[in-house]
Image (cartoon, rainbow, N blue to C red):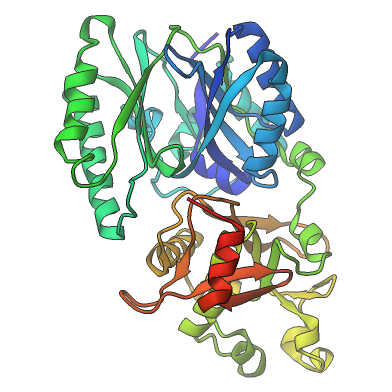
Length: 471
């Protein structure tokens, strides 16, 4: 077997429509490794999870799982499956960390590799292109990897000998401001880079998100340098005031085995993805809006103005009262999906007399415009970054790890390779969220009820919160 490879995160996110999660698992009274592995593989197979890693640990937790989960599967549904498959092994703990951002991923810090956030356009050429990449990922010899490496689609994954470790930086006991969290993030990035470059620790990866922690750091240390883990990682994190200033602390887990019992890095081909996804854009648009589905024509542009005048003018009210309002409402309810790129026909009774609307393909009760108008000359990366920036700036507390923005291509006879934006909002019971469109401005509490998002205040808001306690 040759050198294994891993796919670029954006191929997971934008092509395969997957999202990265970690789970901590504990079993009592006995951890039986091969039976646990069987149950985990069954859960992965149930939900078409193709990329994963399993770390066996010493201590309170027996296993940490790393998995790219299809966005059509909520973390709650997958966790229920996982717990059911492992019930016979007496699973006692199963908690989740949802990755909002990959700050450092070690295969892309090796010489000659691209950064995981380097400019990269997903250009999937064919099923055969994906299949060859998957074979490279498995370490098959005799294949030409030049194109994949040059574009950054794949990076080499040369696992070195040593002791794998996982450092958890817990969530703050008090809500952090955007600036405070940003400072802690920058300090952790510096510690990670220094540990990898000058301190001799290997395979350093750093993730930010929500769940059982706010930051997760993984790495490997040689046996002779084991105590560098304390001095170069844990002490350094404590020295920046993680506990004193941010109300957080570290917990460290050490691998109990040298090699990974389970490791696979695969993405679905177009054919197989279509067979298992069940959630194409057309599938969404064939349904009416609901508690967990909202459809918007745009994130930024006043589509009414475009329809009747052809002008593409951005409007803050469109953003605030459109996608932002829907995201906050879903965060405070049961999560959901927002599709950007389609108009409700009923809003335009005269649509057949309007040249622009008449030219749009129709799916269900929607006229599909895609996001071309909404892009306003931007590329997808800057468009998605702007949406994420607005989410983090105008929702308090920032819903890190709970909201994902991905692009969907629909190369069908009806839609003709039209681009859509899909915003996935994860269900959470972590805390309540508020829209705050200007710094220190009024907080607006919004909740999704049926196919509407309503603003609650006073005793009504208090009653809703009491009936569904969080935090």
